[in-house]
Structures are given as C-alpha cells and as structure tokens.
Image (cartoon, rainbow, N blue to C red; front, side, top):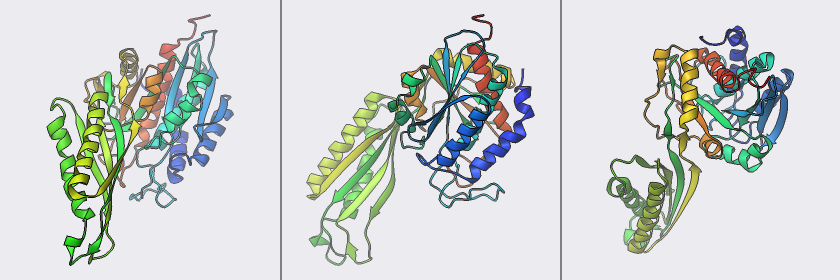
Length: 390
C-alpha cells in the first residue's frame, strides 16, 4: 500500500498551499496569516476549529465513525526562521529576513493534507486533534500551547509529529525508539570589566581578553568533565564587544547553546559554566553574569508508538527504505515537551536535495507532501480502526 491515492489526487493543491506559505513566512508567535489559512482550510472541510492556544496556535477536532473514545494528536509546526533566503525559486520568500529554512511550511501542509483526507473518509473510530503549533524555533511554542491547556481541552492518548530530512534519500522514513533528539540550553554570558585607551592596556580590565580566554576554558567542560561515552556539545555562537580600533572595551557579551541527552549531564554543564565564570571573574577582577535558559527537553520516542510508525511506514513507502537504526540527532525539537506529557513518536521523511535545513539555500522537495500526509492519515486509521466500536 503506497501513498494514499486520494491524497495523491490533490497533491498539486498541497504544493500550491505549501508554496504560498513559503512565499509569506512568519516567525514564532507572529503566524497570523499562516494560522488563518490553516483555520480556514480546516473549517472548509467540516473540521471543528479552535484558535488562540499558545498565541497563534490552531487545533482542529475531527470525530470518526463509531463511538470510540480514543483520541490521537497529530502535530505540525508553522513558524519560519529569522534569516534571508538565497534561492531563485519563483515562490521564494517575499518578506526580507524571513525564510522557511526548516521546512515547517511543508509540515503544516502535510498535516492539512491528512486532515482533508480524514475529513472526507472518516474511516476511523475515535477523535483526531490536528495540532498546528507556533514558535518551534527556540521560542517555546509547544510549552505555550500546553500552558494554555492544550491537553486539558484536547486530551490525547498519544501524539505524533514529523520532520523533513534532506540528509535522507527521497522516500526514506526514519524512526528511532528512545532518546532521539537532544535537550538544549541557551546561554548569555555578560562580562563587565573596565575600558581604557588601546595604547594603555594596563589601565583596563580587558573584556575582550576575558571573553577569549573564558571561551576557551568553557570548551574544556565537555572534554574534561563529561563521560566520553555520553554525547554533549557546548557551542559559543556569538561574541560582541568593542566599538573602535583604539578603545579597549570594558564590556563583552557571549552567547551560545548546550546540547545533551541526559538531565544529569545538563546540570553538570550548567554548574561548571557558572563555576568557571566565577573563577574568571575573581582572576580578572571583573563581574561576569551567566544566564542559562532551558530551551528544549530531550525528545524521547516511546517504543509502542515507534513501532506504529515503523509498521505504517512499511505500508506507505518501500519497506527497504524504512530506517529504524538511525543515530540520535544533536539538534533539538520542542515537540519533546508534548511527548513528555503524552506518549508518542517523532519521525523523519527523507527528500531530494543535499542542502541542510537552516541554510539560506535550503529547498523543500514538494514530492514528499503526499508521503507525510499519508503517514499521518494511516497512523490514525491503524490506531483507531473503523468498526472497532460499532
């Protein structure tokens, strides 16, 4: 059983929706146009629509045949990235500094495709909650929806999500039971020294020197504190300081991210960052503040739901292209917070193209839209089969 024939029949319409969303990208908590299109499409297919969860989030509710009480959530993220697009596509971004460089326009479209098909056929017994989430890219959209009562208003027995994967081949689907994506912290380190003339460094508490040496010291945390058999990454991604060639700045600011798969290692790294910064503050007679924010939880795929994805994938694509031994990813995904509340699984759909996500030249392959939509739809039909409660 390949992709669903009915979904294939309106694949061109899905492509048009996806390219329209791509041309009009909106970043986290600003998805007003996008969520409006989602709500309008769902309503036009007879799906009950709820708006405003987590700001711009949308939830569609669809009941199938029979009297089954089981409820399943299907989730897609809607936000774009605050970056420029560097492609020559006819449907490229029309908004400067905004780009669907992670393919969330595709995820939204796939979930819409499954919603349309399921609304037409209702070949399932239970209730589907179509969850369209804002602000996945580091702004806490999943947590915002949960805080607004997502799973209290729309309780789910299990929940599923997906992501496009240009690092896989077209038609490949990967699912990894257990820890699959890393937790992420984001940090800001502010250094307050004392400025001076560039020709008189002895009169300064040089924030640039402190930043450079502190940055090197922080790199020793993973290599000299974390068990080598445990994966962890500490990356300094920004350093800001200075304004002139002949002025030693008194202030500097560093920021970056930490990734790992263990709460214990996460706390160890946080502790060592603060200890090292305090030591440098004493050594250089400066003030150093460290702010560490919990960005993402570890994404853990449950065994049962992972098997569901694997079985459905073998029916939707060539069974030889279903990958179950993929390695965990150091990237993070805030769907993890939904799966901390509800058991579920998150999988990847491969597509043509070698440019990675978050690259200005990234291009989503529209040929995977029916694959993702069919995966979502078949999961519902498998987990809540029609006639189960006739």
